[in-house]
Length: 623
Image 1 (cartoon, rainbow, N blue to C red):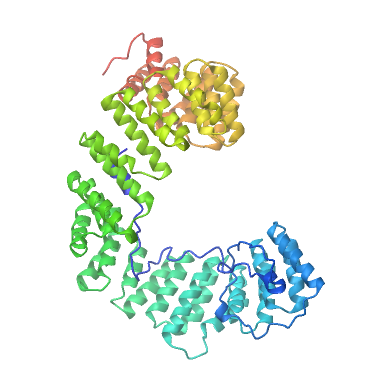
Image 2: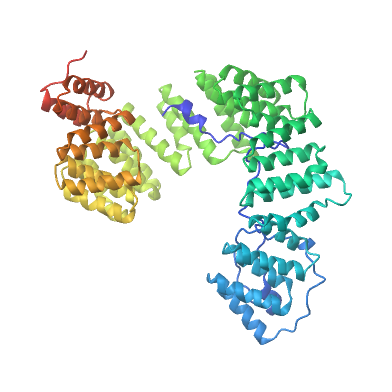
């Protein structure tokens, strides 16, 4: 693994920090406007004791106790009928019978005229993704609690979410207080808040058009223009978003939000870079210059303009020497420039500062990538102990697998297989939960060393502990194939298919193993075709398909598929297969050329060596 590409996958937020808000994907709304509402505990209100907590589903029902209408609550006398119906409804909701619970709550709300019951009905309806019923219940809630701001907001957002935009228009006008004289800043805040709701509209283009028409009287506000730009982006209307961002910048030439938005909307990377660079030149002391420069740096990195990125990162580093984002970005740039020593120093500082500043510690995955990169840099320096120390710090499951593999292979290459095995065995003892992963890793090392019996025994010893683990069974099957236990191979691959019916690799492995031994070829073809349906365009599966056609004597089809596989993955085994078909079809010079290419990539590949021995008695001559 190349550590340059590894570090490039670190999760570095590409949006500026602080108050700057990029246009693209600036807001990801919860699944709907009901998101903040939890179970209301109506049973507690009625009987004072019983209420099993119901986890609220994300929904467009607003919830704000301070703005609820408590003046219109009915004075009820608790009677057995109401109590029985309410308990039945709440138990039904707890047990997943949402439809029954919804009807009971709606019936109770109409019967008692209690807005809290209508609110609960709206919540239950949305949990079942029934927008019509949810809107009906929210409208009842609003009717029963006419001063409730959450009820009004829920009706509005459900109208938007269900595509009833014309019904939503008067509510939008009311919410924006279009016909009232209110401070512009308050209206700007309301507009920004409502823009976030438009993401739920089935037709975001129509939602944007409605929103824009209502806000047209306030087009001289920079913030309104930026809000409209975000709404246009949500609707995939880039041209409209660009117009709004340009208007915002014209209204306030020093607007950082506007320049960042324009840079994101630029048609060419060079134009985006020029906009940001010119802005920084005009306003070198801008309060948001740091965030804008970081945006510029990331543009340079995306375009692989390493020198320009480094210059700007050095400026950022002068302002904040231990800023974590700057350290990571600069290290990434220096790795691309082969300045490994300084990059390593910066990454070590990144780790140190992240550890010391608990509130600034980066997410685990990001730190794991830094640890892996530092380990690889120590590998390059032939410092085995230090490399393994960095790898040992990796915690995330996926990155941890990479770290363990690198540690084991490093020990094998530098100190021998026995040391690598001892390392993995110690890790198994320390962390039994990793037993399967570590056994698989050790078996792969043994297989690479062609110690196939040991690899099989290692996996067989713990088979009963991992018999529900498809990855383990798959590797166990392959290890069995290496020692000629085809019965185990087939049994275990079929178990993998039973556990994971969509596991393309198991279908392919079983189909190929049959084809390679010239057994049950129709069944082999069926298995491989199923693998290809599950994982189209996979070169290894296409190679298997070509190989089974070869075994069936259909050389023309075999050549077609093998050429396709070789174009996608020119490895030694596919070269062996393609060369063999070409040889038998009389294209012997081309066959030998393909074999030579395979040798250059993997000279000791067993399949290729056996093929050359069978047809040439030796290796093909090197040109």
